[in-house]
Length: 63
Image (cartoon, rainbow, N blue to C red):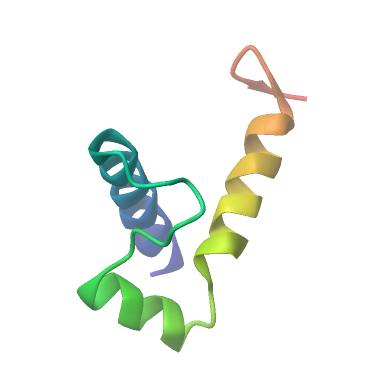
């Protein structure tokens, strides 16, 4: 379930970025926002996790 949320959150973030929403604003709405509250996952935690994952790669390969 968490993997589904993370995939949907990533997609929502991409769509928000294309629409010009500032990076620090939470793009999660409706069911995604309720799911995030239920699992106590904030947008900032998700962004931090993705940043760590991107920072720990070199050319697409995990370091």
